[in-house]
Amino acid sequence: MLQEFGELNTKVYHVVSGLLRSYTLDKKGKEHIFMFAPEGWVVGDNVTPDLPCELYIDAIEDSVVYVLPKDVNRENKNAAAFIKRLGVLQKRVIMLMSASAMERYEHFEKTYPDILNRVTQKMIASYLGMTPEALSTLKKVRLKKK
Amino acid sequence: MLQEFGELNTKVYHVVSGLLRSYTLDKKGKEHIFMFAPEGWVVGDNVTPDLPCELYIDAIEDSVVYVLPKDVNRENKNAAAFIKRLGVLQKRVIMLMSASAMERYEHFEKTYPDILNRVTQKMIASYLGMTPEALSTLKKVRLKKK
DNA sequence: CCAAATTCTTAATCTACATTAAGTTTTTTG
DNA sequence: CAAAAAACTTAATGTAGATTAAGAATTTGG
Image (cartoon, rainbow over all chains, first blue to last red; front, top):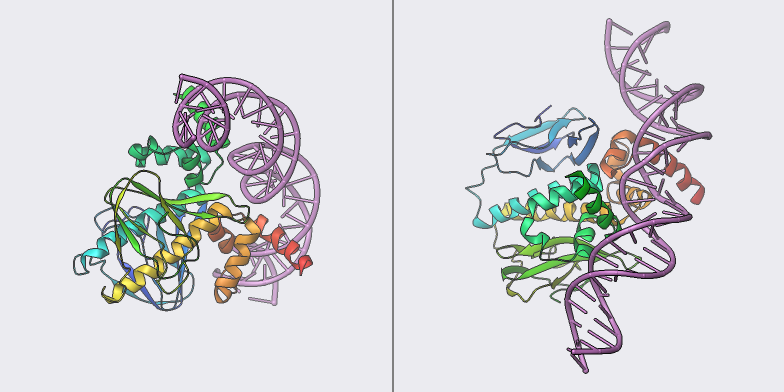
């Protein structure tokens, strides 16, 4: 086990040989593998080191691994933008794999409150990987809930 | 419309004001939005400029946009690794949103033939966002198909 | 400002995949 | 090597969300 959910100051793992995986656990305790990393790959949680990580990382074969600092500052200015994009994508994959339509909508609502009112329902549904009909129904259920 | 599916030498779009979106069309012609880009964001297809792009990008509000070259070489060595990771994630989100369990498995089989035999079915199912039971059934159907 | 197009909602029906359960095979370990 | 654990398969049943269809609300364009 190289990294557990919630750890701070996490590293980046350069795999020399063997095989690593990164994964999440959903609220039912079910694993959702986020990525495999065989020889030559670099894995890490795509969040800045000051934030608690959201992935577990462990080895599923005997492996030789270089553990590197995330070292955001030494990289050029664009690196910060890259990391941000990676982080968004990572969250997106996790949501698609492990969250229900309702949960994905609520996450979107919380994360992009501004965008919510600037695009059509149809587009939000498309972004969330569901039909506009499903989104419409879900929102009605949601109002009752509150 | 800033970028169409299949174009070469695509750019990166820095949004000064307005709102862009990137999206794919699946084989049924259905749109799957990949990402929204409001003010301050940078969008682009996460593939190197020499490959045909897999996203459409257009503006859904009147927008002011800087069109920048992807300029992979001028960035430091790590940039190439970042781009690769972004590309993998992008493909993953697209598959999760728009492909069936069977299609996702076939894509995995083609893309990671080596990994296929190095991890358990359970792990592959987890990576693909389905249950081991679904994967097992799907593989049986697949054998008959061939 | 009105007609046409598009979006949104609602509800009935359908289906891909999840869940559950049990038996079988493979792997691990003491 | 035996037995315990883990992985894999198969099949029955359940369900979230897709599809279809039709009407209502909103937006667009001449």
